Amino acid sequence: MQLVLREYQKQDFKPLENIIRETWNYDKFCSPKTASKLAKVFLSSCLTNYTFSRVAVLDERIVGIILVNNKAKHKCPLSYKLKQIKSIVSLYACKEGRKASKIFGSVYGIDQQLLNENHKSYPAELALFAVDSSCRGKGIGKRLFQSALDYIQQEELNEFYLFTDTSCNYGFYEHQGMVRRCEKKHHFHINGQIATMQFFIYDYQIEI
Image (spheres, rainbow, N blue to C red):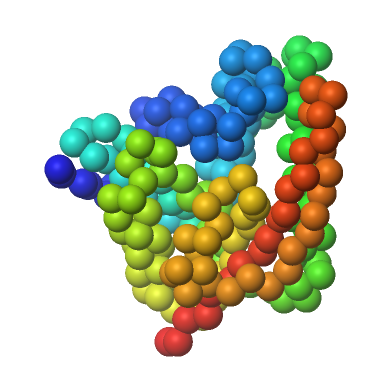
């Protein structure tokens, strides 16, 4: 088993899109075509919001990614912004996509409420963290997380935060020493069913 961590490259987009699609279970509440569009919007949006990236490659297969944003140094390349806009336009082109986008909007709103209620301003955010489900339990997540910590310490930042929810393995963050600061419950109406989720903000204090 050969694991390599390297910076994000343009050709990583499609395999990472598939990991995100599966991780966040998009196919459970929309068609495969819309699930793919949702994953494109999510990933392209995350890629407008980072200063540090590490992609995990296991035996030449892409199996995970972590993105960190040092807010003081962040500059979004125009090509990434255009890719985000293109993916959003594609999603809005169909009725199901417009419906699914409302969920995205709700989640973004909840995240901002959590940040406001936490009454803190952070220098850095862990903007994206995902590992292929077939590779979990192999220490890949820990390696990616440690690479993010190393970067944040190298930048001499004293803390960072992330958003997560009950659709993810949020217990991982507690095992890594992160602290839950705020949480919020929300009910989604999806395909005639009500789905209840808890949303969290976690942070990590670093001794410099």
